[in-house]
Image (cartoon, rainbow, N blue to C red; front, side, top):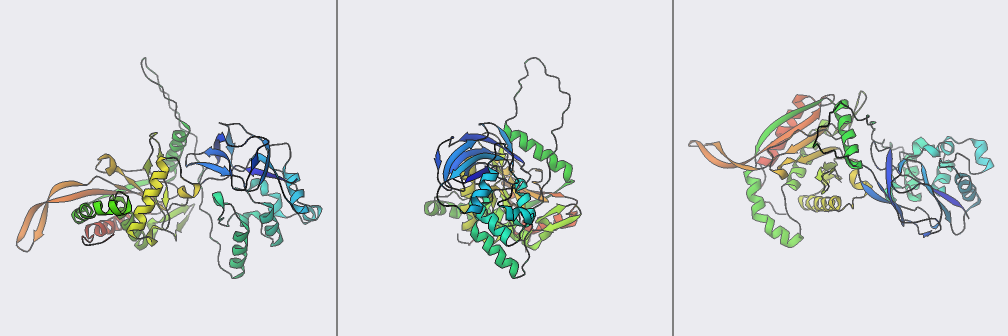
Amino acid sequence: MSKFELIMPKMGESVQEATITKWFKKTGDKVEEDEPVLEIATDKVDTEVPSPVEGIVEKVLFKENDVVAVGKVIAVINTEGDATADQAAESDAAGNETEEPSESPDTAEVKEEKSPAKKDYSKASKFYSPLVRSMAEKEKIPLAELEKIEGTGINGRVRKQDILAYIEKKQSGKPVQEKEPSVSAPQPPRVGVQVKPGDEIIEMDRMRRLIADHMVMSKRVSPHVSNFIEADVTSLSIWRDKVKDDFYSREKIKLTFMPVFIEAAAKALKEFPGVNASVDGYKIILRKNINIAIAVALPSGNLIVPVIKNADQKNLLGIAGELNRIAEAARNNKLSPDDIQEGTFTISNFGTFRNLTGTPVINQPQVAILATGTIEKKPAVLETPTGDVIAIRHKMILSLSYDHRAVDGALAGAFLYRLKELLENFDMNRTI
């Protein structure tokens, strides 16, 4: 039978390793295609790793709680059914006794061609099946080019139809979208701390350590600046009070203010694309898609940031439904790798904790993060045809922390003011 190497998948930007938290299969167990083999954890998400093939688990190369680098072989699976000679030769060469992926070619003919894609498969960021490799080699697609293809399989795995779609797109002359740049996390800073009698020492868990590294890296990479603005959201507050009960009865979803914040942010980002961007050296990458990440506090006290993809293309009902789904999945540890990738802008809701606002750290490789504060009733001066009056209004503070390498005060101020306008002019008669 042919042998296939199951590798540690790449789970997101800047993630270089993952911890094996649980094996669902052991040596000798039968596994179906796309059936979970093990569970892994990173600072981004905890998820199951499925088998891309059907077969028998021949070898498990790591134990639970081992930390494994992305791209390393974690298990070897003997497949069942017919396989081509090329596939069998490749798998046999790949299934060596060592933990490192083999660089042996499929056949003598392939070896003579010295295909760069073949030689570099040990450095691939995700698993490529023999069929995909064979198609890539036939079309002379090197690994560097293969890595750009967006896979539609589980955990982003590239499938036959993805290769065919890519070839068709390539032949039509359309450009291939590059992957987001990653930034390596620094080592955690150490300072001398004296422990006093009675002090309690709490070891950071895995997620907290990685969050700490990511935050320190962001502050080192991006010069942070913050702008603040106050918004009168009286119309929005009255509208929500009017529709929330009927909305819950119909959709079984609690209607918070966040879907409106997301909708307004998406509209403002479309008007100010410089805020929906990333920095790569001296290049500013303006993102085509508007994918808004939402900071979610977990019961453990840690934080995770799932993403609402193409938020500008969703209506308010669609945003509310997707927000509810990812928030529930985050709290129940059910987020998929796709749920936490490709964010282009982040919102952190300090109002949840009755805070006026905050200055959150930028979520790399983005260039800005919005903080929304609590909504409070305040006296305010209103201009009327008969003169100024003092009235009770619903007010909140918005803050924008941004990367001064790419965003200047003028752009940040204009974006924040546009967001204020969108919230203040919310239609009280709107249906959802």
